[in-house]
Length: 247
Image (cartoon, rainbow, N blue to C red; front, side):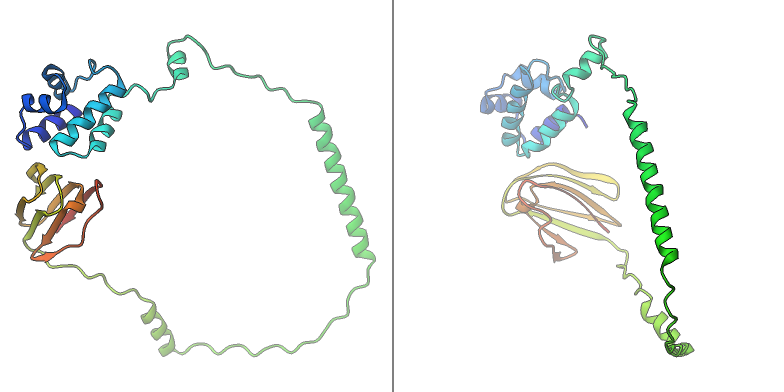
């Protein structure tokens, strides 16, 4: 999904016309049309483009960071380093330094090897001249008895992991209530998109699938979710992005 189509889908889901969006954000309708066509060449650079995206996101009920991330991935020109561009255009080449081996390195290695050999000879001669210690007699401990078959079976049985508990298959019923704020939602029921767009505070939406319901939420802290009649704990915090699948 492109950045332009994301802006258009969210605006239409919020039931806001281009003219109304232009009046509330002070952005020309022509520029808004180009942005929804995924053309950001006339925004005046990355800084102005990001400012426009923040204003648009606040008006159509989206988390501004979602639009900024899409812009950085698809349109930003600040990620490429200047040196990479110069090398790519053959303007400059990365200098390569020729490495030469100094005569000091082999000499240092030779001295180190001789020192190690001399130290080893001194240690060996000292060990051969020292008297051997007298042998000591110590009583050996009795061998531990082998475990009985019943003990082995008990140990194996206690070490075995408990089987995983799985829920029975059946219909999945999910209800969303925008109790504390607006959110952008994308609901997929049994592999098909059932709802996509902004959900404003005070709205309630319900979805039922035969096998699975998948959701994408921005600002999950503003929503209350009920799964098969049981209220769920909050799925995330303010302005976070959350994806969940219920079976």
